[in-house]
Amino acid sequence: MAGTTTSNTHFTAADLDEMVALRRDLHAHPELAFAEERTAGLVAARLRELGLEPRTGVGRTGVLATVRGRVPGKTVLLRADMDALPIQEENDVPYRSQHAGRMHACGHDCHTAILLGIARQLTRPGGAPRGQVTLCFQPAEEEGGGAAAMIADGALADPGPDATFGVHVWQDLDLGQVGVTPGPFMAAVDDFRVTVHGKGAHAAMPQLAADPVVCLAHAVTALQTVASRGADPLAAVVVSVTQLRAGTAFNIIPPSAWMNGTVRVFDPQLWEELPARFERIVRGVAEAMGCTATIEYKRCNRPTVNDPEMATIARAAAAEVVGEANVIDDVRTMGGEDFSAFLHQVPGCFIAIGSRNRSRGLIHGHHHPRFDVDEDSLRIGAEVLLGAARRFLEA
Image 1: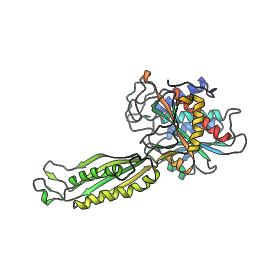
Image 2: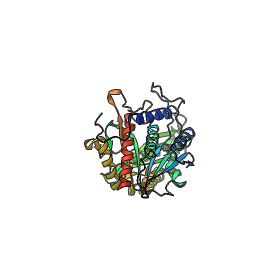
Image 3: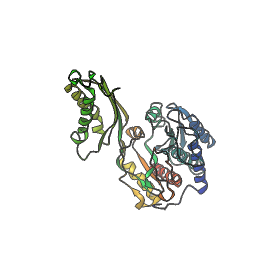
Image 4: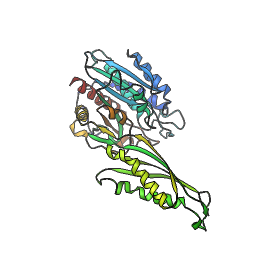
């Protein structure tokens, strides 16, 4: 463990045991995007037990609840995602997935347990803060679309939040470390599919073809200039072609070829410009080689950009829990996160909670079939998230 708790903890050993038990129950029963029926039902039932009145079916399978404080004030939204991944779990643990081909391989079971733990704290006698706390349990983060669906269904209305915070267990940080990064934290995620249409012919007579395979190969190479020549060298941009398909025989030039891949970027302005740049390159290469191109360019997530003021609040809350030396302020990844949809409309901060424990072999990264976390991270995550909310509301 990289650090120890320095504050007087709000969460007792019994609270942690309860969060761990809930996390393990959710881990054993993973549900994919927009199919989180059991999970949402369990969340709603727990909230009702605490005297809250949850709203269900928000953004299809999301759950919202509001904790009203002791006196009027601002509103903060705290978010946890609930969905799992289509991965076959390889862990040999008592709480391993009971459903073949589905697994909580990214820690959303932890996030849900953390937010329900916070709900219990807020509803205890004397636990209510100034103002209001909206508890947001979101579906479909992994496929994207869950945050947007909840927002479209009123997650940011009545009451509209003045700030928002979320946490993610983080396998790139050791237990006891917390990442709070002002500004860009996670990248935008775009998904592209391109079909190049040419003219087929026998491979021995290429002069009779408009070869889509050669065209696609040139397009793959040309797309690398999006990063190497089309962006400031100090701006992080990734263009990755991950799938190529063409042809049915070794001696036939096919009439079409297909590729799929992703574009990742931090800078919001550059992100806005990328589709036009992408299309200009692909269509230009296709035209130069006597082919045409059909382009599908899908925007999955915006860049996840933390508000500097909210990051300052989150950093102070984290330092109180794990100590100033264990708060890391330059954690960044080209991975994406649809909490960005909330941050686009409300100032807030997304916080990384260290969950790796090398001595116990808990080292596997997110989306790995052996992903698992040190569950002490649940208490740290709950302390930091609740601390950030209270600091904002009591300011």
